[in-house]
Image (tube, rainbow, N blue to C red):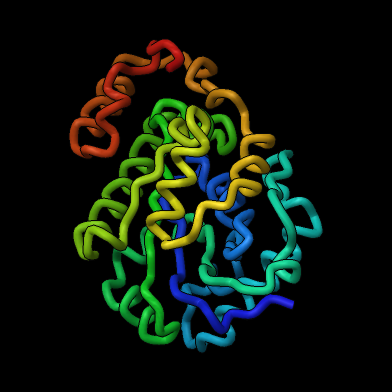
Length: 255
């Protein structure tokens, strides 16, 4: 039976859809001292009028149901490690939030302090990032919306994440690049665990490595990029330091 008596951090995974946030949530949830929900009802309700007990109960219920189903998303199963009930001591709880919640966390400046006050532990924000050309291509393919529309949507979320970062102490916000997790899982996991003050668990690292792709899927190749769209994306990249590695554009070779 899981115990939250030793809870020391509450983590929210934010960012654009199709940026590897579901995988990132699964990686953290796989840690023996962490439980991470996947778009809990609480986050979809923006935690409105909910007590700490209600929020944490919802996280546990959501993670338990996801573990039983294999943490499915978009045809994949992401579950890593045991369900919450098999983790006797939980030091970190959290949520891979419903995508629009990133915009709300930016727009409602009182929401993060309110959550911290109710939970009585530091709120840690992890920003899931992936190459914008791949993200925008996938969003376009999945939604059918024009590429130009998805470009605007993508950079709205970048603006929101940057604004949230600017309101928080440096040790409470972490950029996490999808490509880094796939290229060097042990180093990425060590960085995530350090941020959340969790011990690195070798069995957890091995379980993650067994589930990951060798490299990110380059969905950018599915789009016939118009010059105006590439120009708009490059202009957006130039605005955010956390995107600087992607400036080479849609024709860049794999890392």
